[in-house]
Image (cartoon, rainbow, N blue to C red; front, side, top):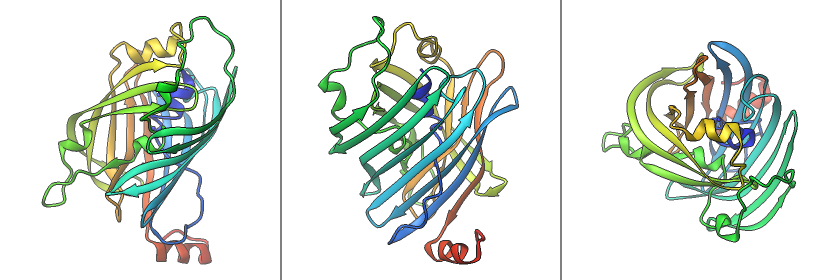
Length: 284
């Protein structure tokens, strides 16, 4: 469908990015298979594989990736994430989020269940004590969305079916089991994109600002890096057969060279094609 380490790994490139192949779900309308390369200054430092399945009223999204390099969110570790939920009027309503991410100095295990945007059950590994960590309260677990579900955008199509600026006009209150932060999206431009396999066509590019709320360390270099007006943008592409958009490309400006998460595969497989691929071992 793309970035402190766990914040971006679990969100933007989160984001971005999306996901391990999970096999076609019963009643699936469409299945997105995607893979992304992670690079900085055009040097590849990691990759992400992604899969998302969409049924009549539910979705499942998974992500698995590994990176090495300078950014703790995407770098020096690996991780896998899964999100499940319902689709109401074309919008994701998350119900479950599971994550395990490992870096050089920390491991995050999270199992989160939600109802109506509120956390009903939470199991999460405890971070190391730090006097600079902003305390989480019950209020920070209400009216939230998990990092993976957050990056499935309602398409907000025009009358002729084209992408519109409205897709970008939103602020997402994200909780990853340990940290609460906002991602504020605003429209930047319309563009075109082409993957080596799969999608070629228009994308809507959103500017993104990162706003930490709670659970983070105020002394974190990464939090400061993302909060100081860093230029971040995400290009969203339509997922055929659904009313959703998913991340195609993420870019974060950096003095040493932009950090880029770029889709080299972005394919939507119809249910009949998915069954044929399973029987022949080939993706249609």
